[in-house]
Image (cartoon, rainbow, N blue to C red; front, side, top):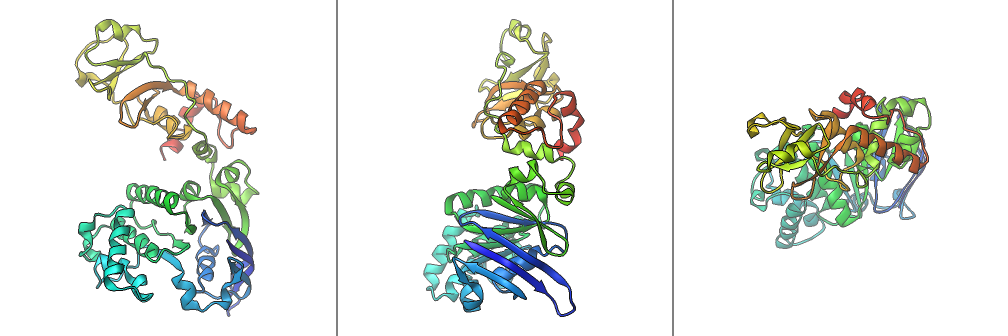
Amino acid sequence: MIRIDSVTKRYPDGTVAVDRLSLEIPDRSITVLVGPSGCGKTTTLRMINRMVEPTEGTILLDGEDVQRQPVTTLRRSMGYVIQNAGLFQHRTIVDNIATVPRMLGWGKQRARERAAELMERVGLDTSLAKRYPYQLSGGQQQRVGVARALAADPPVLLMDEPFSAVDPVVRKGLQDELLRIQDELGKTIVFVTHDIDEAIKLGTMVAVLREGGRLAQYAPPAELLSNPADGFVEDFLGADRGIRRLSFFTSEALELTTDAVVPADAPAARLTAARTPYVLVTDADGRPLGWRERGSTGDSGQLLPYGRPFRPGTDSLRVALDCAVLSPTGWAVAVDGDGRATGVVSQQTIGEAIRAAHTAAGTAPAGASADAPASARGEDEKVAG
């Protein structure tokens, strides 16, 4: 465990970057530091590995004051990932990853074998091993940065806005990869971001800092969204925090309508038998092709797009609602792991599931109505964002 106890960082000009901050960062978790610019997120992170020395207070790593440890030993015991990866441009990818093991005295062959192993773990093709950083995309470089930080198998991983310089699609992939790696390795990760959505997605615990480096709230993401500590936290979370909170409710119990899923070669009678205004047409393998108005005829070129499907039990109610809101029919398509349609569900049914989830959690909807489908449509832009 990392314990930050009444830590202050005051610079010679009197500027206070961090003000009496106290946090207990649990082992084998992702703790996210989030807040506006100038709130001391990066300063706090750098005080953990003594790139910045605190003015007051103590930081304990497994009960030992980090100030009493040799700084080089401390830093080598922690992986460190920064924005734009911070790779050595004159070294190949494999040698970038092998940097810390080599500094620890590993032989070249052993270090490179470890680097190749980690390339696979972070989703990099080992054929890239002999390339240089400039020959990789931004997302690939960030994966190299993560692999390098993991190379010596440190128990602690410090990550300073590592995904902020890549586009949203790549960023989502990197976030998913980090969660997968964490599930496998169980590191103690301290992650800095200014993006509340990233904090909520990644964090086991989230520390919201206000300007001046003071702690506003420290809580699990679901609690943060349900019960913001004050107006500052509520404003920082945004007006659509109720929609964000749906990320913590499973879609597993959604009641799917199956008779509205019809193969393309089904008899015409099947198109009129469904109780829904539209039917979902599938191919011979059961994969969705598009929507057709009940009772209509014609070829597949006349189908309405089916939009983005969701996977019940795997995706959250937020994803299911998003799929329904963005669908031209107002219905979301459910698929299994192989992409085969398992049913469809309306905004109204999703709204009922949202109300039931809030009731089960013992809370009212946070910042957004669950009164489906009209209120759901009113949140269209928020959900799409």
